[in-house]
Length: 288
Image (cartoon, rainbow, N blue to C red):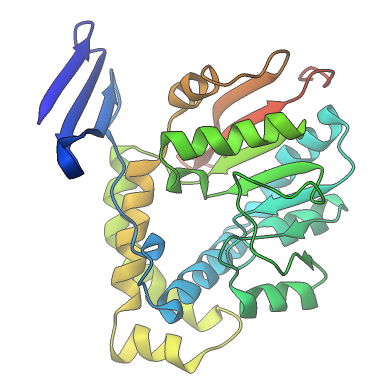
């Protein structure tokens, strides 16, 4: 493994060797931050059982509901819609629905839910609650022209390596559509340490997850696989999450003349908060 640095401890990159000896970036650390480690999440793996993956996304949706995510994310979506002038809204990488349906109700707007690997049971439940669901798989880096309007990604952008993340942003730019990216995870020591409590949280929350699945309950309380698979993915999510400076650096690589890119960490309650990247096309209104 090689190490490259620029400045006195300002930026360090660790390099490894991939297949055929090709150098690959393992992690990058900037001054005053934890290293970003693009480790694997179980849910991203092709052979990961659907019963575990669907339970994980359904758990995350329930958790976002319980923490009242719509209350503090609603103004973010409303701002993006108002400033961009977008009249439609499509949520990408929706998983089991995430916070988008509750946000839509909160701000009085409609949303289309979509995902590359739709959790069909959970999205059907979201549809029964009033959300519109795009039935076919949707690649966030190649969104169909029929799905116009503001694009949102909640707790999903960290899944993408830099090149895929750039493709997601560039696709929005090429289509002239605004995009708002929100990460509730954070690459910090307290967040990483908090992952140790995820198994307990899964044990407490799973009875409230809808739809109810006997297999999920068995995999939580009888053969407790789910608490540990969700905990691992939660830990890796924190380690993968980009900070605002890294998001700005990513946007600087885009071919996007006239676009506005805003990245910030926004506090909610106490130490809690979220990271926001807002990309607005030319002609959008300035921040209030």
